[in-house]
Length: 309
View (cartoon, one colour):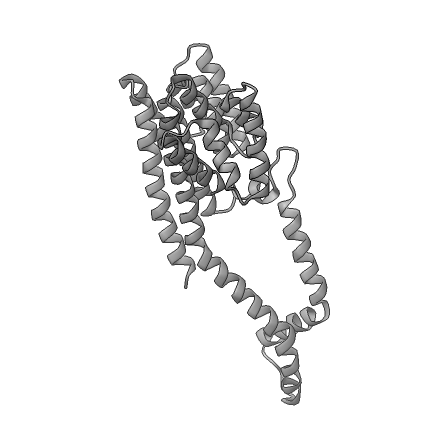
């Protein structure tokens, strides 16, 4: 969101015919975010020393992705920085919009699940044990389900502190990032039923949108794949896309190389072949992205309506 805001402000100033250095100075002067203010100060200093804007941005990969830097570089090289910022704004907004839709669709079911689980936990841990004496006064053989419930309640009452501690440890363990800079949860999402399909479609949509943008900006296919590849997220697919790049560098068509690996469905590969043959790969990729985005919206509606009850 901060990147969208920064790009929007910079575009507005450049569109108002403020030169780049002046625009960045204005952004720095009116910036409330301490980190962003320092960042802009460093970029302004480097530009004054003659370093290109895109090179300045590339020094901060945590804040400016390679794709962003490459689009800015292309805009600088062609003297169309304003157009490059327009493309980036459209791209970033689409990606942010898709993420927002996923979060909105899952927010209510997740909230209800947490509240429901919490309520059941409190009932079993604190309420039911107080009613257990009433069952003992009956002096009758209790049904098996009731006995099981009472035993669960007694167990939770005795060990509830340890259970909460274990849940907290588990949450932190899922968030720990490994050598591949991916948390356990990030890897799990590729294997959870239903969720993995939405995650996969979102990855394909983001990859297609990114590759389309790079190609439209004049970046060659090999460089574009290097920048768009990591966006797909799954380490296995990223590795396979590197092999696709090697195949293309050896003269193998993009669609033929994709057909060797099962990164994308047949529909995707066939569309890529059509785009290659028609010389309109960038627009075909944009169409693919739009198609997957619509599928995700439909899937989210189905999932949220199933979880809600």
